[in-house]
Image 1 (cartoon, rainbow, N blue to C red):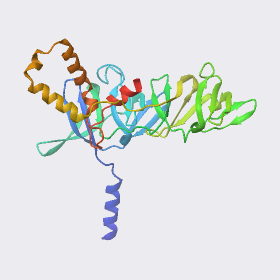
Image 2: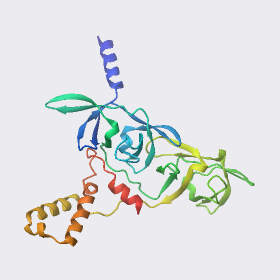
Image 3: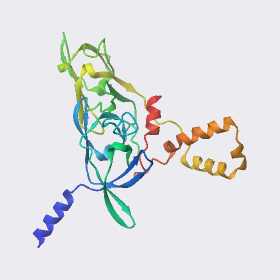
Image 4: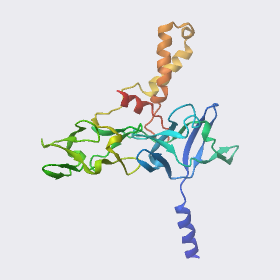
Length: 289
């Protein structure tokens, strides 16, 4: 009996856990429920990558209003702000939705999907970061401690970790020679190994590798959250505006302020909670600065 019980527990533990998700569609419908999957498979310019669902913040069509218009191409936002662009491979999702005290399984009509959100707080880097941009539209954070560059020149072969580098850039075209400046003061100019760049990622797939011709830039960035008013302050302002009879007769200047606050509202929702729906607004605005 004990052996049978142990087998049952082992099988149950092996099943993927239920992940809360929120799916928004072009006709205004929103489904809240959960899925049983652990990874999102994306076909990118760097090949097929498996992304742990726990690292995903949201998925949006790369172009157009739904996945049909985008021809299946999506931008996957990770919770640390990395953007991976590619084709969502086999995106059939069975979602459990609870209505009337019962769970109903729904196959999501992904062609009309506008936004697929998960839960979890934003993960901000504690200091300067390296960002890799590619010709395919990817814009990802790189783990400098686990990324090693292999540089060949007339002096030999050097393998500095990216964490030792203060600056890394191509001398001309990205598939030619690269200039690598180290914190020690050493400056190396040479070709990268196999004419390709392989970097480790702190979130998402463990690493990505792509030809140097597809690299747009690899640069450092002091990327920090924007300073925005607190969610409580925003809520208080909205209440005050609804209570004020003068709000209806506001002039163009006040209307513009209201529009700005309304547009920024999702970014000011309390994102410190792990069970809040992920919203990329603050990350996106900070990357654009």
